[in-house]
Amino acid sequence: MTRLLLILFLAFYSVQILGQRHPMFFEEERPLNVFLKTPKVTQLVKDYKDIKFSEVKKYHFIAILQPKTWWRHSNRFSFDFSQLSLTNWNAGGQSSINGLADVRIKRVFNKGLIRWNNEFIGRFGLNRQQGQGLRKTDDHLELVSTFGYKFSNDSNWYYTVRSSFQSQFSDSYNYPNRDNSISHFMAPGYFFLGAGAEYKVDKNDLLFYVSPLTQKTTFVLNQRLANDGAFGMREAQRDLNGNLISKGQRMRGETGILLKNEYRRKITEDIEAFSRLSLFTDYFRKFGNIDVDWELMIDFRVNEFIKARIGSHIRYDDDIKVQRKNEVGELVDDGPRIQWKQQLGIGVLIEI
Image (cartoon, rainbow, N blue to C red; front, side, top):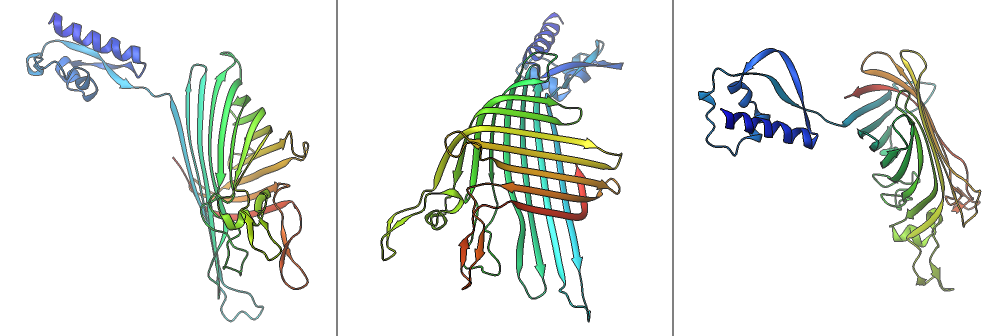
């Protein structure tokens, strides 16, 4: 019996040191043999072959080990759908179907002064009109990882290292032309890596991040687009006959300052607003010329699963040139412009 109690004590103490489990107490007592047959404890004492659970009948134990995790997770899936059907409609128009899927997955490790936040954001939208094939309306892929060390126990500020990756899932076209894509996965792709400080309040999801030293790397891994100088790349050099002398740049680095702000607020019980703003400027190329990425969403909950959304997304990047058609119908660069996307839809929302 002494050896058995010693084994239990060592197993319990080892688990406490590892910080993975903690004792939870129940009102009723449990026989030791039932306690030992618990999978969590059986795993700890599996090497002691001479323990016979059937022989331990009279001893009672009131504690049982339960797992404890420092991870907090959230999964948010939504799908917006709209449909228009016309039959003998003399006012004109076209039947259409629209769908937009939005996935946001978050995993946060929070223990003591350490906080490690990981987030995946994915959006993909399609449209189909009568007499036309499927056309993409939205496409966004983003991965974010932020590691922070708190200034002190009672502070909301963290020393922070942050990395993020942005691109898209599939090819995009300047419809109705489907011969050559104007963008696709990793053309462009953006990778940010920086260090700074972050102010974080969990109560209302308020976040403010400033990084005075951030490296931004832009990728255009499609050589045709790189040769054309798309997304700020140095274009290919050609001779007078159009023959290629040197290929276009496929990767460009910038070093600058990054500011980010996120804020979520419940306006009423069923109305929630979320804003996410990112500002970046390069120290060495056109300092003060700011890249802007601002997303604003307002969700209206009808019930637990049905919601309506109004969304606005504004972007400005001096390296991205908007194209227009000239007098003969050819597409030519027309310089940087403010990009604005609006969204209005109703759909299904699932949070896990």
